[in-house]
Amino acid sequence: MNHRYRKTIIAGNWKMNKTLTETKAFAEEIKPMLGKPKWCEVVLCVPYVNIPAAVRLFKDSRIAIGAENCHYESHGAYTGEVSAEMLKELGVKYVIIGHSERRQYYNETDFTVNKKVHAALEAGLYPIVCVGESLEQRELGVTMELIAYQVKAALAGVPADKMRHVVIAYEPIWAIGTGKTATAEQAAEVCESIRVVIRKLYGARVARAVTIQYGGSMNAKNAAELLAQPDIDGGLIGGASLKPADFTTIVNAANQE
Image 1 (cartoon, helix red, strand yellow):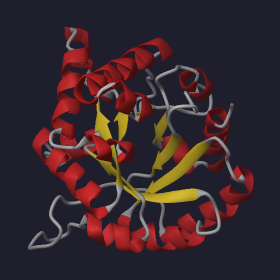
Image 2: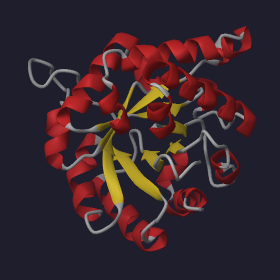
Image 3: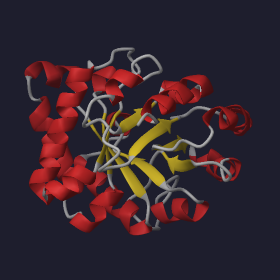
């Protein structure tokens, strides 16, 4: 982490978990545990149906609410979809875009990810843009080339003055929900390479200010080691974000000076 140049962000991705009742119980348990973190921003990306309640429940805290996806159009005949403008009006601040599960199960492409990034920025949301490689791609030795392509594709057409609103999350697909985690060195190497790509696209000043998260099974036990790496500025947390005690431990690890 580097608090001097950029924001540290710990974002929970609840995926398809927690009912409204469970969301209320979670809020009641975690708010007194978390307090008001000084050095990092805390985000909970929750299912669409829980967003209004989450915004209300965390209104008096420093926890921002995010969504797990959005559509790239502002309106239209897209049954079952939700636009960035709809999310913004509900009080959402962040939105996850291009998560590996969206790419794998719902055929999201680098092209649609880029369109969603633009839609989110136009609506005034902060996109958390996910990039990552499969185990096969890592074993082939193409990780850096693939990640560079994904970053360039996602940011195509995004002006430099909008980059302060963009968060990049490196999530090795082979480490999501598998219990496997990239070593701190592996994660740091890729996050550093992402910053190099951004530097080539936008210059050193912009690259230095962009928050880059690690999103591959960060948990209460490994968070401190991962967050100690200079180019890892937070985490996109899956399973551990569903447990108030574990999530609080991760936030505390990110809240060190």
